[in-house]
Image (cartoon, one colour):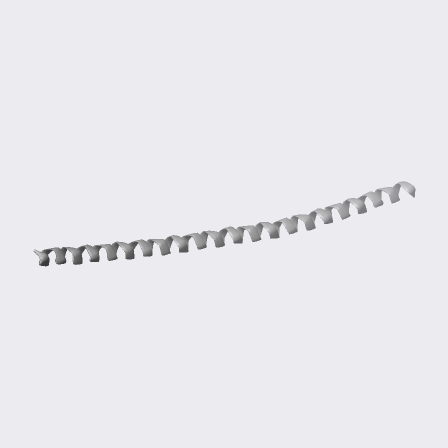
Length: 79
């Protein structure tokens, strides 16, 4: 009888270790997936920041061109 209980405990112990390993592996996969997603978000944030800089640069150029056009128009009317 004790032998049977011992065998059952060994089997249950093995099953629990297997389940624990499965949970640990799943947790590691989820962690890796979250890290990958975070890296993607950070990459997109960097891209958006770069595009925002480009937009500000282009806006400054547009303003400078508007000033040049304004000066050219004023110069033609004064001649």
